[in-house]
Image 1 (cartoon, rainbow, N blue to C red):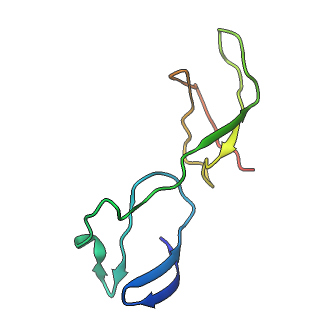
Image 2: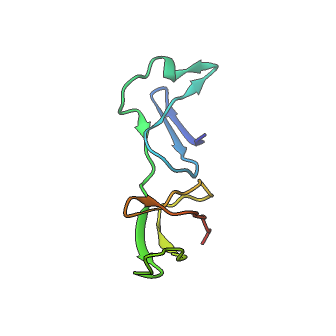
Length: 101
């Protein structure tokens, strides 16, 4: 949930988003037990985190047999282990692990 930082008026609330990943998260507000999701159906009422961005690789090539450990550095991989899936030329890497900086 968003950490509430401001109630501006009966028409505006300000909050700080929690860490996360993903796209088109539904945004809803609870006020005295009433949920805005019952009346808010517009697709513009969604929030998306920035997509992952690859900045560098630990190496640029390897043997055809594979089995090379490849370290991928970048941004927006998330702040926790969200079970990353790494694909190389359409094939999924046999294992991947998220490492905090």
